Amino acid sequence: MKREKAFNFIDDGSSFNIVQLQCFFTAPSILPPRNLLGSEPQPPAPGAGVFIPTTQSQKMGEGGIELLKAEEDKHGGVVVNVEVEDPIEPLNFSSWLQASISNWSQQGKKGVWIKLPIKHSNLVDTAVKAGFRYHHAEPDHLMLVYWIPHSPDTIPQNASHRVGIGAFVINNNREGEDICAAAIREVKEETGIETEFVEILAFRQSHKSFFQKSNMFFVSMLRPLSFDIHSQASEIVASKWMPIEEYAAQSFVQEHDLFRFIAEICLSKLDGKYTGFSNLLTTTSSGKNTYLYFNGHDASNLVDSKNQQA
Image (cartoon, rainbow, N blue to C red; front, side, top):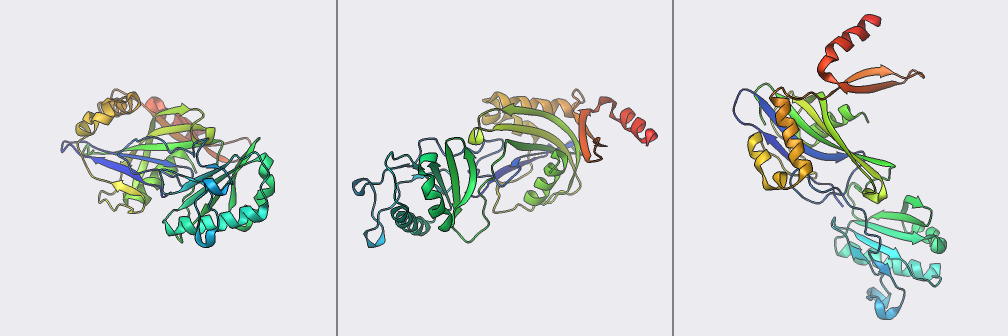
């Protein structure tokens, strides 16, 4: 369930440069390998890995112990959905769970998801003792997770909203947390390129996506302060510089409205025909620092006014 991302750095060799990257953040995400603004990470399907505790329907592990029926996910993990109507004895569940974890480990599986309906709440203690932890709870079920390998756990955290960042990094040669800080951090961690925040160009919101939560995706403009790419192998599928026209002409961009509009917005920005949202550090009534994002066309006047008041 390792998070993987695709980055494309764009250079058309003219007098102005742009870098484009796509990434998701807020918590480590379980993303499959893909190119650029790919589909969002998906949670286990509601009916995946239906659990039926009968010998006839289960595979047998070492020592003849039954294994839990599980559905493989796209990210090297498995999903167990306990939907049996009859009560399950914790001792039996413990044996099946331990044997299954051993089997999944031998298969090289990573994350394990168990969806326990409220009627099987008696199995929570058994799962926790086996190493599982709470992921999230809904009115009718509890989701527990377990990370098998001895490597950093990349199972995503639960949230009321998930936020994605797409960053176009602009420099003077036209090559092609807070939201502003997160975009800078993601670029640095996963490409090695230092940047500074310029603007939020656009954002979109969708509902009932990851674990039925709302999802917000922000397209940000960043200006690079360095140019050598040092990709984070555990996170990045591919990274390179490419002409922005070449990026915009790719079939997956042209065939999807969202990607095509993002490309058009960025091209309009480079041509001076579009203004995004600049960030201004302000304070709340309680004295907490917070960023306000607003149309940057008259940003210099507003910032000068704020500095004069200070």
